[in-house]
Length: 329
Ligand code: FAQ
Image (cartoon, rainbow, N blue to C red; front, side, top):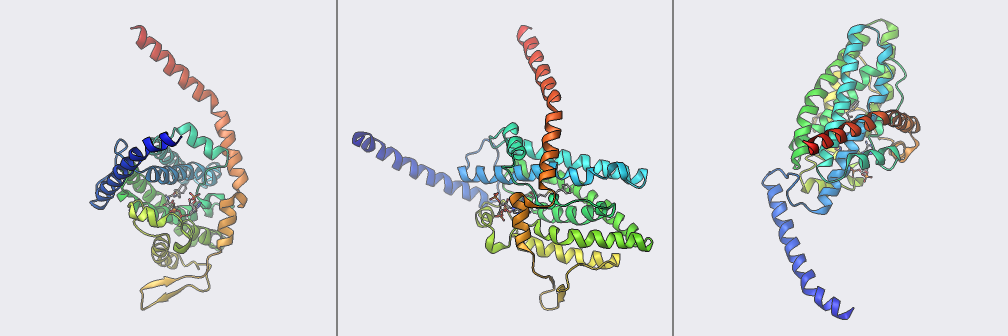
């Protein structure tokens, strides 16, 4: 054992020097705004945190279909139904691009999906809230997609190539989603008293959970510092949250709706809207699996996965047959 330790010592030392040099040139590439591609060398922790973030993002898009999917059959007109259907299908597409981007880091889609289905993986807290009325379709498009865009536009410049490229298309589609949601809110808030009340009630329920979408406050964000150094994140959680509030308050004013925050006030000096205290205990509970719909969401995804088994089997059988035919030719 002593001999082995002696033999390994110089090797380990050399490896450490080599790794430090690689780390340095990796950081230099990041600092020079180069994109990192799947076959490039990267630190294990960079691979790990990106796999974590991209797969959580993919799961969010997939689980995110459920709250709105709930209303497709109850849309009030053919036009609204077509728009909602297209939006929900887009979210599915986003999930698929994102799983593909995560797979380039070396974890298979089966493994990633399994982490979601077994409850090991996180997905955005926002999708654990129920959609109680049609106005929720407006509020989700306006606020949830609005928050998603605010967070995702900077990700188009993320240092990891496959993620940044996926985000470009995702953001274009999210913009359509946000517009259709806002237009829905305009219609309701300019409608009759009952419609206006429905719009206000949806805003009341979605506002605070939307602010939580940006993640914990900067002081409590465990990944932010490193992700910022690696240019995965370009803005902190609190910076993006503030940008979202500043952009959204005038939109609520245009609708004639009231944001459910008595502490909301414009600070003339900073030029920003100050908002009240976020209930971080609620956030913690939701991401720990105790939100209003966590169990329903996971049950729905597990059911869909089980019901899709025949599709996976058929696709595998087809691929196998094609491989055999090619081998025989
Ligand atoms: N929910 O250290 P940080 C959409 C977790 S897509 C649940 O600050 P980070 C489209 C975080 O993962 C919405 N968990 O983490 C759509 C970490 O846990 P971990 C999804 C959250 O990564 C619209 C821990 O807390 N978007 O809406 C949340 O630096 C309509 C510590 O947090 C993305 O995923 C949360 N809200 O920053 C679809 C965007 N926040 O992993 C359908 C990409 C934080 O250590 C319908 N992701 N956590 O166990 C990101 O930008 C970042 O990952 C953040 C979090 C900003 C979400």
